[in-house]
Image (tube, rainbow, N blue to C red; front, side, top):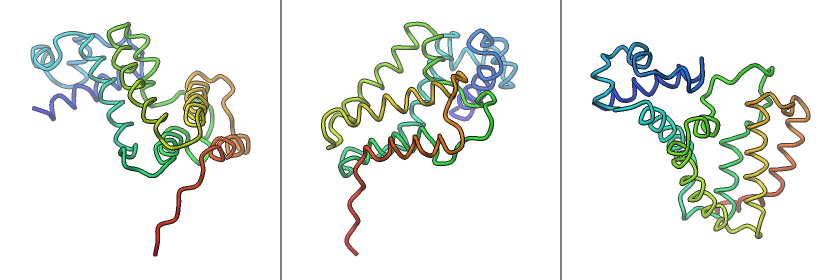
Length: 182
């Protein structure tokens, strides 16, 4: 049952990458997933439910790489940076093959955006409680969010040496993790 659901969500992600929210139609999603329209409707009764399902799954994937609440000070903020901005500068400026979760949520309307906004409220609380000086975690989050938005939209994202230099500046905002006793 879960395999069919995942196959449908994978298909919807492919449609979203190819053509955005407008490309997601129930018949197109069913055909892309290789299921009947009735099978699709069993799992997702509407286009809204499909798009919400993709957003939930994408934020679950992101959240899975973030540390738990008992992590050392700064660990959540560092994980936010590491999960969002790669150490190596991405090659070229072609379109992303990943589904842009924030833009997807906004384009999907208020009911889809609510899913992302709720997670962001939770994440912001975690960032605020990450044990860093006030404002540091939020500044890192804002830098990261601006960075991937620039990359996604092709708004002159940092490349090459600039990528490395700017990432190092953001990383320097986060104190190093204490070394474990040997």
